[in-house]
Length: 221
Image (cartoon, rainbow, N blue to C red; front, side):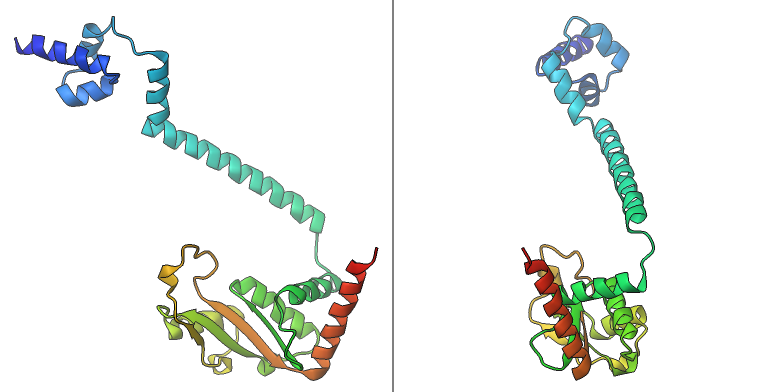
């Protein structure tokens, strides 16, 4: 009697669109038994597609396949970009620095040169660019913009290490009232924003005029 009830229950579950694995989990009977009981109750093509598309293993395999394809595309793009750009000359770095300063640099404070960014690589590039004009690291001051839930000493130590600048060159950080944990988009903000500041009137005038020249180049018809 019990076997009969299990069989009827299996048929009822199959009619609901359950897979053999799902029915097996409910009734505890083998798939071979279910195959015998339900051979005349195949699932519709639509239901088969639904089960296939919702299968965790299939989904994970699909994700892995797509990830490998993305990684291959990105690596291919990287190799092409690396080939197209090639080694950077001193002139290349100088021009790149001017464009970077045009977008990220301090321009309103006469005699003050400064750049702010969350990416240590960009700040290091700016340091190298400044150094190419004879600006000594010892003349540069650093000010961090941090969120209220960030550790001031930890972040100062992080930027000091990344930029190879002593902590004695760091000014008191500006602490934002908002918290890092409250950001919906945290990428690039993990260590706050780093501001490089140096007072140098001749260099400020030179950079200002270089940016004027670049503007003129782009405003030409």
